[in-house]
Structures are given as structure tokens and as C-alpha cells.
Image 1: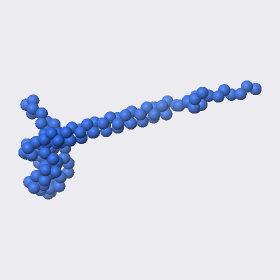
Image 2: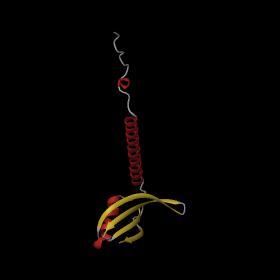
Image 3: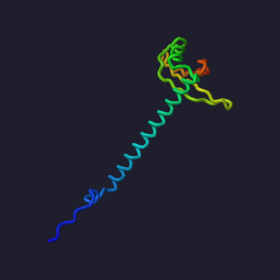
Image 4: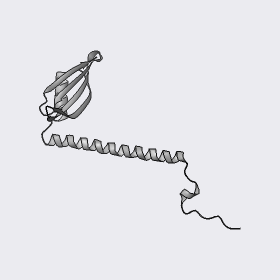
Length: 123
């Protein structure tokens, strides 16, 4: 009687079903998407830090102090974005404030000067 051949790799012992191959492909795709999302977040953070160091934006603490003094309520969210107006690109802080009675106040603030650009109330 002839001995059974020894497989050269573990994959030859039990071939993967289509289901498991699909699971592995989905897992790899999700892992790649997560990694690229982290890289994007790092680059946004780096751009914001560079803008602060270059004097293009005021520190967030300065903006938050002004908002707290001038607008009663709880600050829910802050974003630092680049906006474009008439071809000019500039930094803006977008701040959401929850006011009494559950009203939402959205502020758009020039990040360089701290000047209020717009104010919108949402019920």
C-alpha cells in the first residue's frame, strides 16, 4: 500500500470555500478602508496644526472662549474647514451650540480673525 502524499502547504489540506474567501476579501477591504481613513484624519490634523503655526488661524481655545462669552448654551461640535468665496480660500470654524429650549445655533467664524461670518438658528 502506498502512503498518502504529504501536502506541500496547509491550503492544500482543506481548500477554502467561496464563503470564507469572500469573508477574507471583505475583511481586507475593510482594514484597508480603515487605514486610509486614519491617514486622511492625520493629514487634516497636520494641516490644521500647520495653519495655526503659520498664524492662519486663531487657537481653538480663543474661539471657544469668545463663543461662550457671546452665545449662551452648550457647545456641541466644532469643525475647522476650508471655505471658498469668490475664488478666495480661507479657514472657518463651524460651531454648533445647543441653546435653551433645545434650539440649535450654528455659527460660522473666520478662523483668522475670529469675526462672525454667519449665524443660523435651527429649531
